[in-house]
Image (cartoon, rainbow, N blue to C red; front, side, top):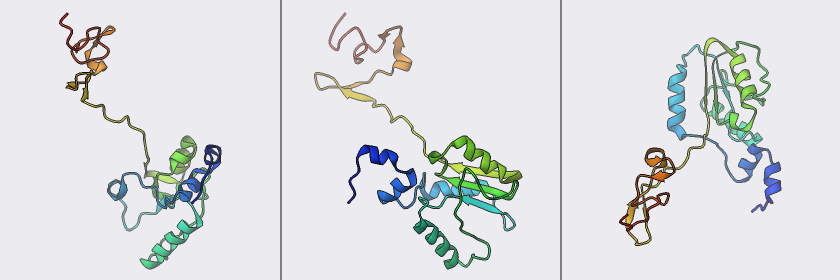
Length: 181
C-alpha cells in the first residue's frame, strides 16, 4: 500500500495518480454513456475514426488495447499508438469521427479541442464526454429543535429581501419555529 503526502499527490501526473490508486479505466457515465456517444458518432464501415485516450495512459493500458484489437481480429484496421492530445501526430482533416472520453479534464481543454477539431474532416464529428461537478441535491426536509421534520427554505424562491417567507421552518427567517408573531 502506498502512502503519499498531499504535496506528493499534487505533484503527480493525473493519469499516474489514477493508476496508482488502482483505477484502470476512467469512464464517465459507464457503458451507457459510451453507447450514446457512439450512436451520435454515426460511424459507418468507411469511417476513419480516432479514439483519443487509452485507460489511464500507462504502457499496460496500451498493451491491453492492442491485445483487444488482436483478440477481435481488427489489427488490419486498428492501430494503438502513443500520442499527445495537445499535439496529435496526424495531418489536418484526417478523420471522419474523433472521440475523446475523460481525456480533456487532465489537459488544457482549449488546446485539446483545437487539436481534436484540427484532425477532423470538415463535416465530420468530434465527440467528447467528460466528468463535471454538480451540486448535490438539496435536502427537502431537516429536523428542527423539537425533532419535527420541516421543509427547508429554498432561498431562490422564498427570500424576499433578507427575510424568508417560510417563517415557520427557515433558519433565515426572523421568526423562530413556534413564535406566534
